[in-house]
Structures are given as C-alpha cells and as structure tokens.
Length: 168
Image (cartoon, rainbow, N blue to C red; front, side, top):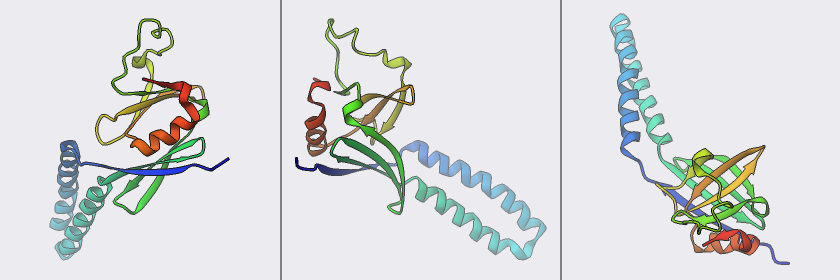
C-alpha cells in the first residue's frame, strides 16, 4: 500500500483585535518604563530599547500560520509564529473521528439524531477566519469540533481513509 503525505500552510491575517492587543500592551508596558526612566534617568535609553523589543516580540507573535499535514491516517495541525517558531497543536487519527463535514452542512431530518448538538462541543478554530470544514472527534473523553480550511489535496488525502464519515 502506498503511503500518503500532503501538507498545506494557511496564513492567518492579523485582525483588528490583534492590533488593539498590541496597542494596549504597549501602553501598559510604557507606564512602568516611563516611571523607571524618571527615577533612573541614566537608564532611559536602555528602558525604551527594552520597550521597543517587547513590542516587537508581541507583534511577531501575532503573525500566525497553520500547517495541516496528512500522513496516512493522521491529521497533524501545527501553528507557526513569525515563520520561526513551530508548535504542535493536535494530532487526529482520521479513522477514529466521528465525521467530517463542510462548515455549511445542514443535516437532513433523518440525520439529526446522528449530528451532535454543536453548542455543547468544545470548539477549536485552526483557520484564517471561519474555516470551510469541521471534524468532530473525541480525545480523552472530550468531544471537540475542529474547524479548518483544507485544500483539495488535503481533503482528498483525508477522504481516502474516511469516505463513509464525510457528510455532504
């Protein structure tokens, strides 16, 4: 049997709330630095350089990309900060998911019992905005809805393992 490996990177755009967060943090960080600069005038230049560096760190942490990779029956989702630091978020065994569906999916009347009440689910969004698909799976006894944006290659690789669990 042939091994499957596909990957995709989704760049998350900075939202207004990210800029607000940076602005609030910069103002909050500036207050103690300005106070210290008044107490220790010799350290003013160093303190403002430190303030600038802190703002740079917060800003660079706001540049986010998600990487989806499908390897055989596993979906891995990682987050990449500022194209430098990678953090593994989740690993999903595709053969053990409940189902995969389009975000616009509306169950028919005979499927309503099969579809879980989504208001009770823990939701994780690993997409630019609202995503195009979602997976329902259980991990450590917690049922979770994973929202993501797979391209056609990722979706095709996933469907090789879960054809019967794809709701259209």
